[in-house]
Every structure is written in structure tokens, then in C-alpha cells.
Length: 319
Image (cartoon, rainbow, N blue to C red; front, side):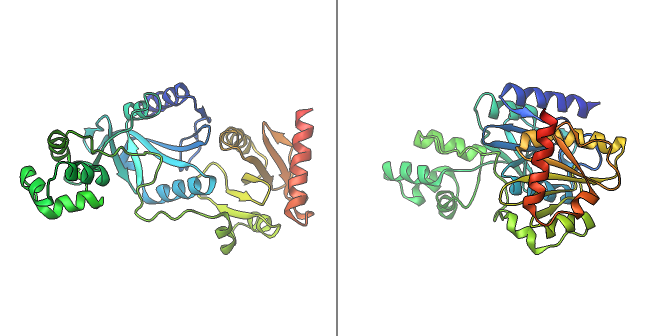
């Protein structure tokens, strides 16, 4: 129940901030709970009452999907261990920014980014080293003189200016009072906290042939196929013209439910949504999700023919 309330609060914040929000991903397993878009900002949001419930496999798939589709990932929750998440503080779980609903509201509605990040040992603030160095030199203070007034080492001040070390809240307040300048660097929660992020190229997926027979067939047609294990769809497939969320299943009530959800997500991610049906399909589409029988797929020779089939089916749907 607590998670349900949290999800409704997150949806309210995002919609108030102008986002289009997908239906809730209520199919297990799920790497994310909501997809949302506002202009160029695409979010994949995982909702956990306790953010420590995030596991490494889920985090990895979220980041891979987001990088592949040009989006960002967030974890929104209420607690960590036995305490509530603090407002205006960013926590990090597997390199993913994690925060509470109030911080989400402040960032997207009030346009007030957080300044504080939680790390082992306490709360810290990233210092804008250029601002600090300029303010220090303007006041003719040496590294040693500033360090002496703050009660830290000369090397520590040097690291602050190089951007190689965060500072405690108390130290930042002392610096800002002493130099009369704001040195705190705001946190961009749309960026991963990986030290060396590796953007996922769609062409990279060509290196690995999917282990699913139908996805392998799609791959041979000329698509890059990013196979998933926890998303509501089986893969994301792309060629030079289209990107499509790709499902694989027999025709069933469970498939229809998944196709509805894929339609909602595809609207947010601005992609196509396609379900390959093993066996007979009773319809050609479910909302915006095009249904294609495996036997139809077998007759195609390249991605252009599949793109054309999808386009024709969508045109018939709109009539």
C-alpha cells in the first residue's frame, strides 16, 4: 500500500511538471515502474519504498535501456535502512540517483536542484573548484592561508579546487561565509553517477546475437536487437528508420495486457510497439501495438519489409 501511494504521488508531481507519464508497469519482473517524457527529457523511474531494495541486475538493465533510448534513470523512494530519505539530498544506488518525492518536486516543479549527496560517513556537497579558486585569489589568500582559517590541510583545499573531493556541509558553509560567494555545485539528477559512463550504441548490440529464436530472426533482418530480461517487452529493436519495443508471445489475455502497457510506454519513448505472435493472432493490433504472426515474419527478407508491414497495419488501424 505504501508503494502505491508513493507511485501516485510521483505521477502527480511529474504530470504537474508537464510530463507525459506511461501506465504503471504492473507486470513482473519489471526493471522500471514508470516512463515519462517532457520534451527532450525521457525518464525511466523505479519506485521503491526502501531504496536499498534495488538490485544490481535491475539497475544495470535500467541504465542500459535509458542509454539506448536516450533517457535517464531515477529511483524514487521514502526510506533507506531504518530512516526516511532527507529532502534535497541525493542518494546513490548502483550509480543511479535516488531521492524522495519532495526532492523530485523541487527539481522539476520548483526548478531547485539538490546540492547535497549522501555517502558513507555523512552528507557532502560538491564544490565548484573554479569559483573557489577565483574567490580565493581575489582575496589574495594562499592555499595555506585559506586552509588554516578552515582548519583543514593545504592539500584538501587544492583537491576542492581541482574538483577531486567533496566537502562536508559545515566546511562549505564556512567557505561561503568567509569568501562571501556560493561555491556549492548543484546536482544534475538526470546524469548517472558512474565514474566512466559508457553510452550504449545501437550498433554495439550487433556484437551479440539474441538467444531467443524470434529475436534472432529479427536480428538477421537487419535490426540491432537489445534483449531485455525484466522490462515489459522482450527487446528493443532498431534499424536506420525505426526503433520498436518488441514483444514475443502466443496470443493470450496476458499478451493483450502486456501489449496495452507497451503501447503506453511506446507513446512516451516515441518508439513503435510490435508483438510477434507465435501461432494464430485474433487481431492485427492492440491499441498502438502492432501484432505480427511468426509465419508472416518468416516471409520477410529485410528490415524494410518489416517496417512497411508495420506501417500498413498501423494505417489500417487508423481508418
